Each structure stands twice: as C-alpha cells, then as structure tokens.
Length: 150
Length: 150
DNA sequence: GTTGTTGCAAAATCTTTGCACTTCT
DNA sequence: AGAAGTGCAAAGATTTTGCAACAAC
Image 1 (cartoon, each protein chain N blue to C red):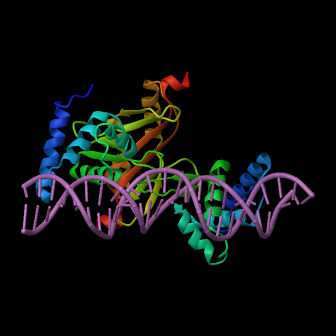
Image 2: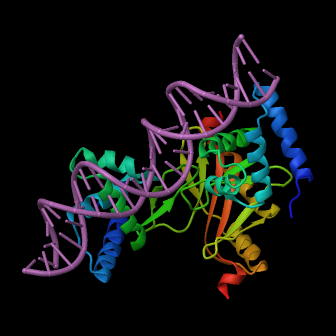
Image 3: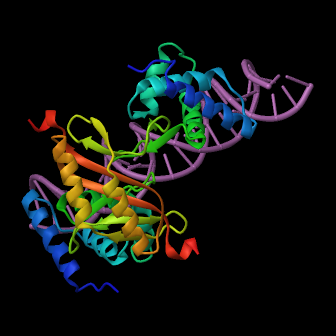
C-alpha cells in the first residue's frame, strides 16, 4: 500500500514546489488533491478514473482542472503520459521509479512493468547506426497475462 | 515509387476480396478508391490526410466512409493501426512487409522502420519469464533524425 | 491588490452512428 | 428485390479553452 508519507510523495511534492516556484505558479488545494489521488492510485490511471476517485471527497473539482493539473505534473516531471492502444491518455508516476517498459494483458487490462538493459543497449545501437539520436522510447508487449491465458 | 500494378496492390486486393467474400460484404468503388489512396501513400497516413488525397478526384467521398473503410482494412489484415504519441490513428500497410518497429523524429515527424531479431528474442524471453503470452508488440524510438540533429 | 487558478460551459478533435438514399449481387 | 454501403449530419468521446468568480501570494 502506498502511504502519504512515503518517499514517493515527498519527492513528488518537492519536484512540484520547485517547478511552481521556477514558473511563478501557485500551490493550490486542487493541485494537492490531484497529486495525492494520482500517487495513491499506484497504477496507470486515466483522467476520468482520477475524477471518480476524487469526486467522492471533492465533488466540486472538475475534469478541466484535472486535465490542466496532469499537464502541469507532466511538465514538472512528476507524471508520465502513456497512451497504450487506447484513445485516452493514462498517467503513471515518473518519480521514485527507474525507466521501465510495459507488458499489457489484452484480456483483463492488467499492466506490468519490466526493465531490461540488454534491450536498451540494442535500441541505442540501432539508432546510432542510422544517425538517430534517441530521446526516449516506448516498448509495449501485448498479450495474455498468466491468469488470462490459463 | 509505388505503382498500382505492384505486388503490394495485388496482394492487398486479393486479401480484401477474400475478406469481403467470407463476410458476405461487397466490393465497391469507394473501397477501391480508398485502397489505392492508402497503398499509394506509402507512409504512415492518417484519415484526414487520406481524405485530402482523395478529395481532389472524388469530392463526394466523405470521412465517415474512410473511417469505416480503414476499419474494414484493419480487420482484413491489409492495414495496421499505429497511434504513436498522437491522439489520432495512423495506418500503414500490413501486406508485403515483415514485422518492424519505428524510429520517429520528434522534430520533422519523419518515421523510419527497422527490424531487429535480437530484440524480438529478448522480448520473448522476458515475457516467458513472467508467464506472459505475447500476441504483438510495439517498439518506438523517439528522437532526432540525422537531418534534424545537425 | 495582483495575478494565477478554478469551474463551468462551450469549443475543438477525432471517431462512430443513425438514417434516408443508393448501389451491389 | 433484398441486403449492404454511402453520405450527410448528428452524436460520442476525449481534451482544450474562454471567461467570470475566486484564491494564493
């Protein structure tokens, strides 16, 4: 379980404070509420899922605010967008985790993370061979998780 | 240059004919027009780009038809959807090409393709280790192409 | 008191759908 | 003739934006 006092929360808050100060923006209740909900979610969450989880305690907080806030978090380096094979964007925390790729179950929607340095090295090699300078990448394996493949 | 008589065109037409027959669907002028425009495009094309390229010769062909037709082509195995980091879907031919992954230039939008069996094997290995059964994957390297990185 | 922020509704995008009309077979 | 397809406009879904009221500094 993710607790509010964990390192992830502290790091995210400090990143956000820094970003807000640098840009002359403000620390608001709404940003705090969305930040907590986002970090507590502990999975790849969409805006409307966030809205649902927030609405019970803060019914007045609207979707426009969440969109604006998640864009802010992305700029601040707290959240990362992932589009997977869907139309809508999902967000995952970008703090307190190294880079990783995804295994996505097309049956139950479960998303697991993995990391493999050998693949990263091969990607670098392929890009260099073509004179490409890679800034970031995305590797997603779609299929059936152990539960769904029986 | 892609010619209308090339293998790609023949293979796509034959695939489409087979799919239409199997499903009891019909071979129409519009499907032929969209198929030709799609295959001639010879790059990752979006619905509105297709619409523009078709509108000059067939102004009455609407976007709904293109959406429906591209969905049909995807089912028939002629086209493959790629969403990259955009909101809209792009399509690429699924015939006459092996599986490949993408290098995407974030400056000029250029998309190159590559293939690497070593990476594919590592993906398989990672998935197996977790009991995941991979159906398909997606690997995209984002960065600057030789022209744009100077 | 400024200036940024929010909440709502409206607009913008991309995609799908309902329906009358047309076109295959 | 009958069933499927098309074209248009309308509706859906997701995301952004304009603006008056509000809150942070």
